[in-house]
Length: 74
Length: 407
Image (cartoon, each protein chain N blue to C red):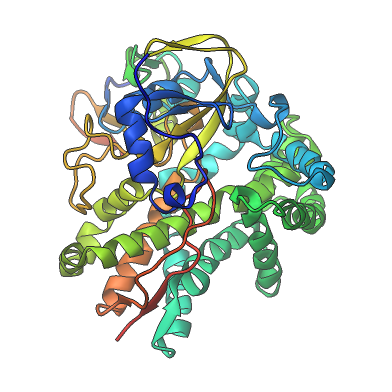
């Protein structure tokens, strides 16, 4: 079974580029301010989530292993 | 309606020399302003710029294809065919599309520019800076624009395109013609078209080659987009030179405007020199905010939109001003103060939303390394003149020259 992830988006940094939605559409959604939120951490495979984080142009996405706290991105 | 005391000529010497006073007054008095002279809306508040750029469905980027109005400032009637060429050329840039096409096109090039991918370029950028400053050092002074800020981004872009070293001077020669894109001179179309045609001719055989044998360069990335059916051949050619059109003058303005800001604020320069490595990131962000490389960007209203009690009609032209948004007192404490430790610094120098500048990470990296190198190598850097002229553009904040000395 896939490990549980803790994912968050720094709203001081997020510019609403929305590429994360393209890479992991079930995890990331834009809120009313058009900034990204991780609404469903288990919505897409880990590989897609890390790809979304990697492709954030302002490095606003953080990913950790929810159980161990290990930082997976950045 | 509120009394607006601001005139509508955005190209007067005063406004070009000091856009902050003019657009600052608009931001206070009439933040969603109809400019009658140029028939466009002028948007000046930070909150409005962020809102607009994040609502791409309301504000179209398909400007060159859909805006039939003539070039401004005006050009001679005999240059109209040249302007038609420029419009058709510009219209094929991926940034001149809306979703869904824009997303498919951006996906082709987006991953090339991720923060991690760009970090791998830091060494190349540092070496290029060292070479340029080595050449200048012996002279004791330089035009920081001509000798440093202009060639640096071209060297980087030429390397990204996979241009052989001996052909770089030719690309640089074309790049200098492409700089006319944002100028206001009436006779700007001829050199601009020469630059555009020259780029197409230069790049065409490289594209042929890399369709056959792809490498890890940017032209190969675009060529893959053609293979996938996302780009036409013309779009591959045009988007290759978009690297130069979008990445050249913007970056050189960051380097020049930032250097000038440092020189005019000796206490900030002194502070920076105490820890260039540690302060470079925040200092570069402040340069991007305080005297941003890009002043304004255009959109067309995709539908009727209400903003602050005004109705922008479908197809109306709109310009949103980074220049005034970055000095908005609603967002920035002491907005007219150059403070290289400012944090957070939510400037809109690279825009926002789905069209947020693709090259932002590269521009930041070049700024950080350039300012660091200047501080470390030339601690006595100082201006050789006190009078500065700017290009007559409402799109870009471009000095004409920046003479500095080192000793």
